[in-house]
Amino acid sequence: MVIRDKRIYLQPKGIKNARNNCFFNSSIQCILSSGDLIEFYKNSQFDASKPVSRAFSLFIDEYEKSNTLSPEKFLNFLNNKIDIFNGLHQDAHEFLIRFLDALHEELPNQYKMCKNISEFKDHCAENFIANLFHSFLKQTVLCPNCKNKSETFVSTNMIQGEVQKNTQDILSGFFESENVDGGKLWKCEKCSYSDYAVKSYEVIAYPKILILFIKRYNSRFSKTQDDIEVDEQIKFCNNIYFLNGIVCHIGDLSGGHYFSSSKRNGKWINFNDSSVSSGRCQYSGNQPCIIFYTKNK
Image 1: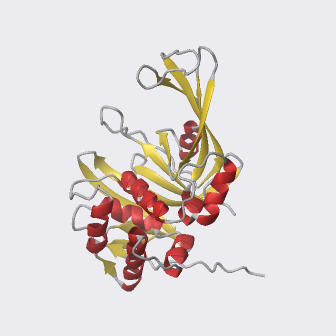
Image 2: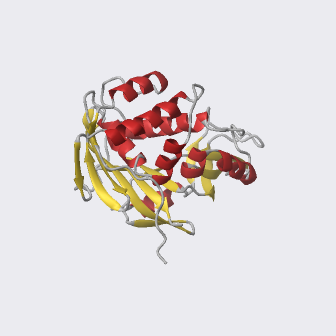
Image 3: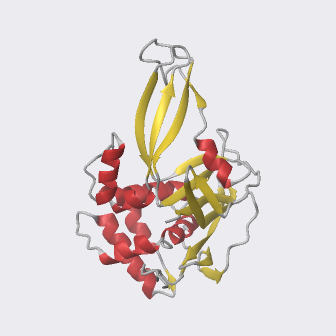
């Protein structure tokens, strides 16, 4: 027996770039490649108390009807909600974080900060964005002097990692212990030691869609040009995730261009503003900056 995928997938369309909005175009094409997300926003009703959700639902409708979509109306709306649309070169990962946060905050959200896995599961059961994109992490800060530990829980829609040789190593590197400076930033609540602390993360719950951001810029705002290999599948503890989207960037902080590829209904599509073509985009190893992975069911 063949089980058919009943999720809704959008036919790939181009998006015009009229105001340096390639950061938006490349990112939103990967978001629009989620059949679960499209099904939810097409089949849900949003009133005036959920303006971002309603505007996004209308944007999806316009995307379906257009051959090449002008995003100006949606960008103008988001400009009043998410302060990153100023016509200059913008950051795709900042847009994704703020946009997904805005959608998340408009859905049922009884726990502003989940304190344990039980609260997080309850939250995901009622909040679609959390259920699809959020990881639930335990952050531990260890005092190297007295060994006192402080633990907090964090829900995040994106994992951010340093440049490594491949995306599996980038993800694994995020969970390695690191030293953090003390002083004004940290002081042990037990012994008052403040030279440095040891911070680590442990994953408690996994997202259905993992967004991995590669931090290519250092504290001096220079770009790391090292090549990375984008793995077709990665292991997130005991879970297997398959590659589903790539956002690439050419240039530096002062200017450049974003383009992307994503799987739409199982087929790779290349998105470069108004241009849409079959297959995965051609890129150099130093260009991938945001990677989308989908959890194996």
